[in-house]
Length: 341
Image 1 (cartoon, rainbow, N blue to C red):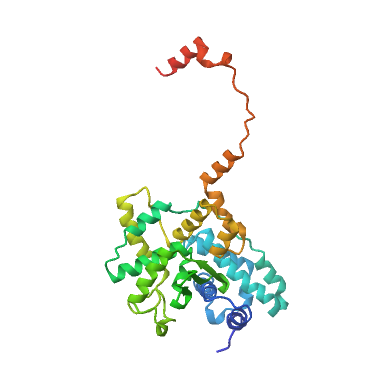
Image 2 (cartoon, rainbow, N blue to C red):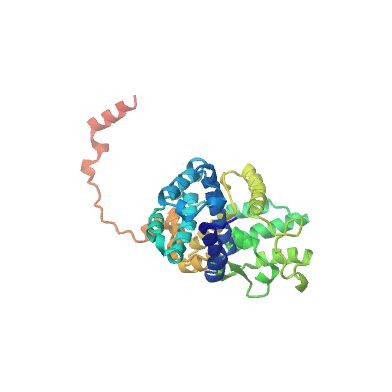
């Protein structure tokens, strides 16, 4: 069977460009490969072109637009997911500009496809009391409970993304002063985050119980499933929601209807901001590339905005004259009273 030009370029893109040249993370490669798996499905089901017959000539701007519409209309994807898929497609065709210059205009047309505007969602976070109450619902009388308490508390204390937590090993931790954890974020960017002493105590108990403090187990997953493998995103979400449900039943005002591991990351950022920590430091703790990303927390905190306005307030509004007060106007008072009848 003859290999098509599309298959050759796509294989080279993943194996040589993304992995070897660009050094993309495993998560990026997985997300991009899922995008092209969906594109192959679309081409076969809707464009009637099987994967082994698909060539670069089939991939025009119009076809890619139909694929993006198919994602939203048939697979019910939102604008955010559509934009993520489009980012993968843009990356591939930007690469093709230098690999197949004969069709440069075709690739430019595809690269001209715009991302869709996303509705900005408000930041979903727990109050300090909410986090404390949530953690109180996790029983520490069982081995599983002690693992889950250490896990969920660490999600909050470190502000880690869930994948960063999944990838942790015992060697990622420094449990003697100054306490800290090493996280590898997007693009395998490394950052070191301080830990609180109470969190370290939870980790020490958990690790000693599971022998994770021994050098022989230094490279194992810090938080493992029953088979000793890494927990998954959905697995951690399930664990969190078990306790969130119990906490919500007891005090619905403290726990929102929807909660995810990312909610704890948002919560940590908001609490740092409310404690007066500079946005630059919060950016570094969260592993944001740009301070603009971190600024969503400042925009979301109405209390801080109110306090900032109050501290800068200068009274320039004159007092109303008592002579013009409606309270001294008998006819107006009578009219207002009649409105209520």
